[in-house]
Length: 258
Image 1 (cartoon, rainbow, N blue to C red):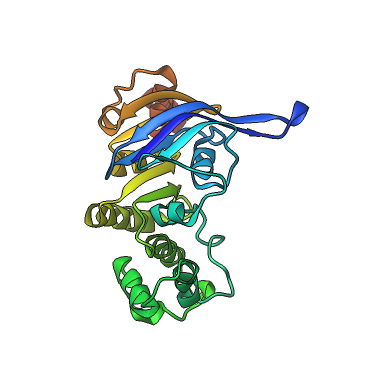
Image 2: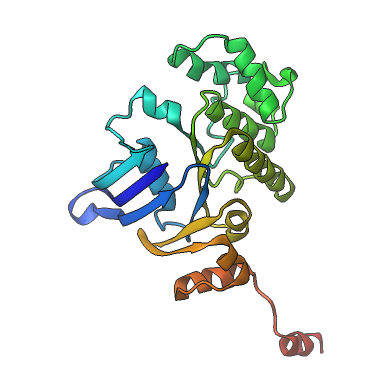
């Protein structure tokens, strides 16, 4: 479904040049959930932005469903690929109602039956018709992210790019959104690329993943290897250890207690 070949993204020139993504390649099968993990600044979100046209592709190719994407992206691309952003407080227009937010992509693409499509989209993300004429400030963080997901799905795309969709939410709400995304993928036969620094989130939602560091691909592995701690690369092992948190040695704890 997605074929990323030797992707390069460069910002700036001369002394200000930043090689944000360096020769990154991976493929994502139809219906698969694929993860991009790494520390902040590793280039994982830039990969998503390059795919959907929000960051310049300096080198390499991006193919979606066998077709190389063009610059600028055309309407056909956005019918196939949509993105859910990290911050639900920034990704929704504060002066637009939910109804206007969801109707805008339908209007751009000349879709009919907007009212029925909006009500269906709200239902799919677990929200009732009463949310239709609310403003973002009248919604919780989890409800905002559900609206952002509904907006991404309303054109019936095949691919969703998920840029840390739960990192700005409370832990209990994170689980709800992850379960919603998992259910939607299975029901609608969607293909996901999920960016996250949280290995537990990636292991829960994805089958395979790519570990990135300093804009480069370090290792491609599986969620099962992540859960079992059997990653072969030293950097990946350090990420796994860091994700398990800090634990004080018993002897230290005893000494402090004493």
